[in-house]
Amino acid sequence: MKTEKKATRSQKKGAKEILRLGLKALSYRQDILPLDEVDALSSSSGALQESLSTKAVTSDELEEKAKAVDEALQKSGGLYYHKKGWVENIEMLLVAAIVVIGIRSFFLQPFIIPTNSMYPSFYGMQPHVYQTEDAVPNFARRAVDKLLLGASHYKLEAQNSGNLYLVRQEGGRTHRQVTSTFPNGRFFIIPTVVSEYVFEIGGKEHLLQVPAEFDLNELLAQKFAGVDDLRNLPLIVPQDQGYTGSRMKLSEHTFKEGEVALAFDILLGDALFVDRFTYNFIKPTAGDPAVFRTGTIDKFNHELGTFPGDTYPVPRIGEDKYYIKRLVGEPGDELELNVPAEFYTSEYTNNQSFGRLFIRGEPSLLSRNNKPIEGCEAFDGNRLFVESLVKDPNSLSKYGYPGYRAEGLLANGRKVKIPTRDSPDNPTGQNAYFAMGDNSTNSLDGRSWGFVPEKAIIGRALLVYYPFTSRWGLSD
Image 1: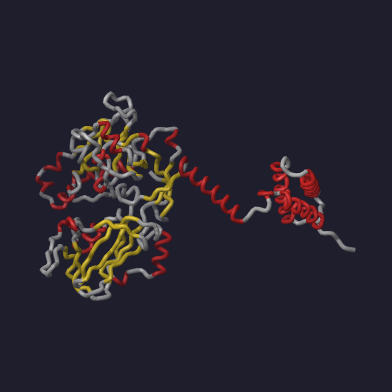
Image 2: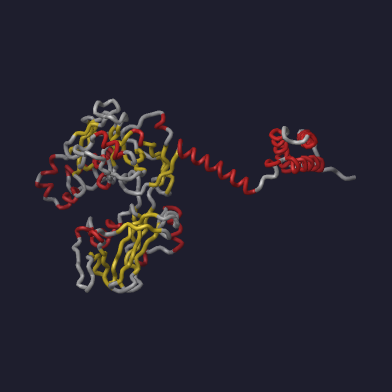
């Protein structure tokens, strides 16, 4: 005697899916189908539904009932049955795209920091220089560094024997901006603007392209010349007939053909999520690491009259990008940077190491509403470093912060009042904020281009999700 097997879980799951499609087609198409097709689809779906409600339903019975619904759907299911594979794939992609766009627009937006204006709170692209050719990593190691740190490897290999020179470009610049695709384009294929440097070894030009936001000048100055700025190197005008350019000698070492003259990695800047949700309910506050768009800033400050004598919109930013800076002032606040008087004594001004600190503005103390600014680690770190310089001009920053620098709108002793939407001299109808980089020695910020309009602020830095370093986690 043959024993009938009970339907398995997977069979019941498949039958339920067919039933779902049967009921869906019946609901949406019964008013346009012939009566015999409606009856067939209705009766077969009802029979399958009854079988599924029976715990002891057999495999053969379930298969027979599901087959009946399948045959009815083949005749009258229309677009609901059977779906083409490409239709399902497109639907899946559309749903995924809608979800991603919704999350990005209203909740979390990914953002990669390109520069070091917020260092050491957030890292932009960082170099890792290999001092010897033997230290250059192999392919496997570079692959691991790419995965964990977002590291991109660059090297300059001598094609001739000779000394290493950097060729100056038109206008005396160290590099030129060009559009590149493979391999330096975005995602290796999308054209993007890069900085192209021209080196010369043994009379032969060598090209090296790096991301436009990366400062290769500083790397070259420190590695080859031991100086802070390439501009401190003398220019050499060669005597070669027909050669009209100039160049800077970077190394006395004679490189042999095939020898690596320069090898380094560029580590990806911090990739973080921006919280776009919170500012819908609470106002930005001083101390927030805020992300904003720059497209309206020039016009906003022109309407405010931030820069006296600006009779037409001067493009001080001239681009529409996402910036991340620290908010140091809210609407109605008064800001001031003061350089300690001790820095102007002969003891300090004659100190060579201290003098270099003035290259990018004067170390100063930031006040908000006539009190030392406070509320986050960056404020404390910048203040403590300047205070330590007062005691010892050779002291180093304990936390990596270089001290706020007095220049531009916040020149030494100049007070800046941040407009509110109700200010009588504010025709914009918007509140304003003031933003600065934590690394103000290397930051294009409010000191140069003025106030940030409230509507330009999109959110607060929330979480560093890549690379996988000690900075991974919630932002501050």
